[in-house]
Image (cartoon, rainbow, N blue to C red; front, side, top):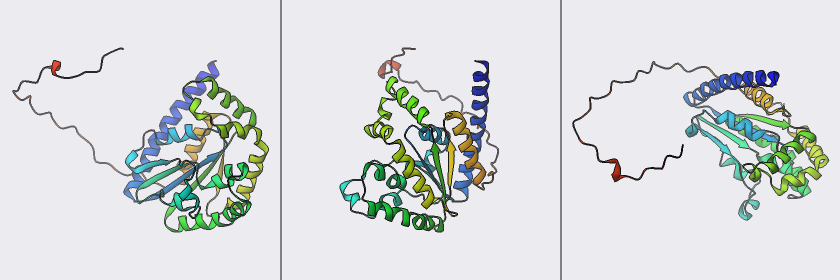
Length: 261
């Protein structure tokens, strides 16, 4: 118990320090008009969401967006595959985080038969060129794959079943993925073989221990973004104006939320 307590204490201290640095990194992105895309991929329940939550927790939401697209519409199915993702790429001074991305085609679409073999092969062939164009436009692209063991994934699925606040996280696709573990493994290996390029490498995050995965991922992210701390002028609070001589309306004129705590 003491070891767990010490670990949690160390984790909280480290994650707080990383979040301060993430704010500094974002300030640099804004000031220097940089464009940053971070992709989070991995098996269901691999810990992507928890890491994204800690990543954005203290960032300015006006300059940071999380993109988690639902299944394509009938109209989108007729478009160039990458088209619906392009609309979400960052402008200057923005960070965009993809909670799953165009790599759906190399994973769930391939395994579940939502795309044809021809569409799948075309994706693997054209994805490196697409990412090369993204990078050529001035966007820094970072790709993370969260790797979780079969045993740990099953534990997390059961936790979602048992927790009424997490039931929404468990979808029919999650349950289907349990039966298709080997299919997903083969799809992942093939994806890495074709899209782990010099321009846009994949970084694997071992995620059986969620807290370690968060710290390792965020620490690595900060290490590969060549940001510099932006200097700030000292902020001093001004003196308040003296109270003006006027009568405030009675509280009974308004509706207040009842206090239950």
